[in-house]
Length: 328
Figure: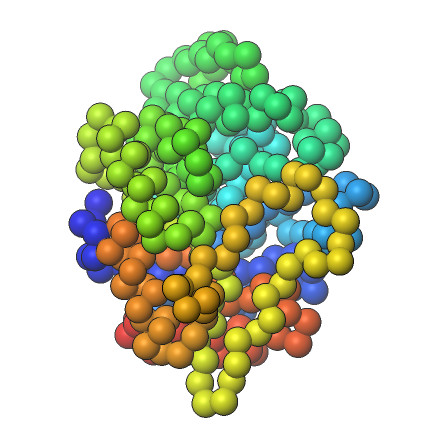
């Protein structure tokens, strides 16, 4: 674990939905991230979108574990992760096997960031645990995967949402202790889950002050502080040059939004009202410094946020600008 203000690593959230849900686009962006010196690539997670929410979040989505596996096979150095995998959507025994396989085949380059999910209709379509029990189910799923990854001989697990008895799981992941699990979420329950069950914390764009407070709470809850990663899932990241201006922030104005979409926090901004991570070189650099001082070690950057006129070439151009800014 780094001290606040230490050297950070930078990664890219590659969109794998909407018009970007295209094999060559996803592979090319992942390869460009590796070529430019980024440390990690991330993929978001949805399986199906219920009809009542499709006007807010469209239906085309690629599956993130599959995207990670393809990316790992196409690259040599860069890590891949999920931003975030909704833990209750998938059988944890099968996820443990899939993650172990990707881990071993890639030389140990996979990270699972996990969360509890938020779209009620998606839970129902997948036959997932009861929506109101998704936090408890997530806890059990994490525990069950660890039991499997660390087992020697027959192992068992007895929970409300996961049960197996006297099964053999092999081989173990290459990474000691299993594939790293970073816990998403911005509130007290997420702090406890990260501290007690996670190898890291990966929240969705809190302010620097909120991040520092969450970090302090997690450290207070942990038995030890070494080996824990403090990550950050960023809002729209944009390095502006010349006469370029900030893009209009994409929101839900004019839409009838289901209640569960209120999970996302507002985009953090400076005292002057500028959205964090979007601005001139010195402004973006100041944002990075503020979050590094708050304890962020790993940044997952979003260079696209539902802009219809922003294509893969623009995305790669932004990756290049940011790489130059931080001297990757």
